[in-house]
Image 1 (cartoon, rainbow, N blue to C red):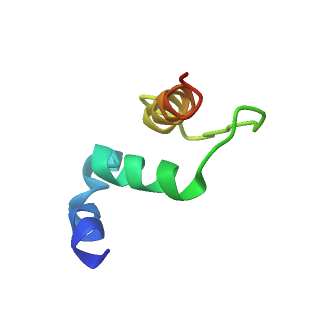
Image 2 (cartoon, rainbow, N blue to C red):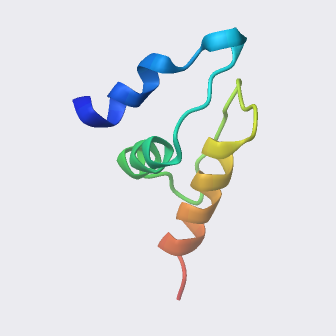
Length: 63
């Protein structure tokens, strides 16, 4: 976990913050959103968390 989060230490320069995609995927998998859950990302920026949660739910219920 430390290795994954070590990349975040350089973020925030010039007022910008971008969460690496592998961190987003890990967090979405840990949260394990369900089809009836409401998903909110108040600081969405590029909507990385929202899009990844959407794709996760699609894969989860694919039949």
